[in-house]
Length: 211
Image 1 (spheres, one colour):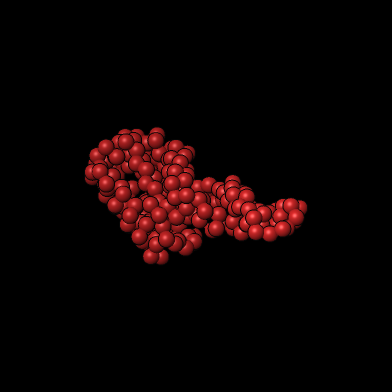
Image 2 (cartoon, helix red, strand yellow):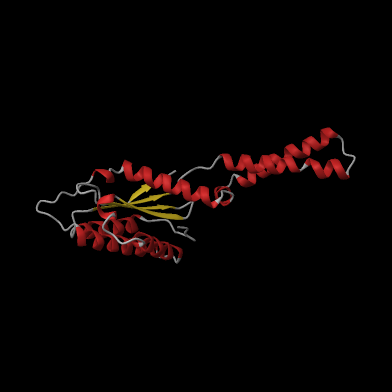
């Protein structure tokens, strides 16, 4: 799901999100992990691809409508390539040139990697839920292990994603995280209440991934 904007998360904001996770997990044996990533991919091939594609077009008008020497045309083509490469190399421009399908696929891939890297697939009862936000792609993903996913009505996770997306887009990133965590906590508590000596298997703090 796409985001419009998102401000940086301060240490205080991260603490609020971490507190929300701890509070939600008091009422369940399930586990919630929140990850905020700068980007899901660097897309460094994208500027080269677009610069090369557009530079290939440059000679044709010059060939057909001018008597310019071939050497000069080649020079214009080379200059156009490097100029376009410099423009497209800016991170915001670079990401804007990536097809939406690739942005979605990379975000889902990175979210899946984090689900495994944070050991959400190893929780007792398979109750782990990941909230993943990727800033560059402006996307949100929620991945739930099959223990809880099988018990939640279809479309439930998407509703939480949509609400978090709207909150972040409106500049309410922390409130959005807190709301999403609270909603997920309620779902987990309904099916997986806390047990005696229930261990906190995974860390409660917001995980921030820097490029």
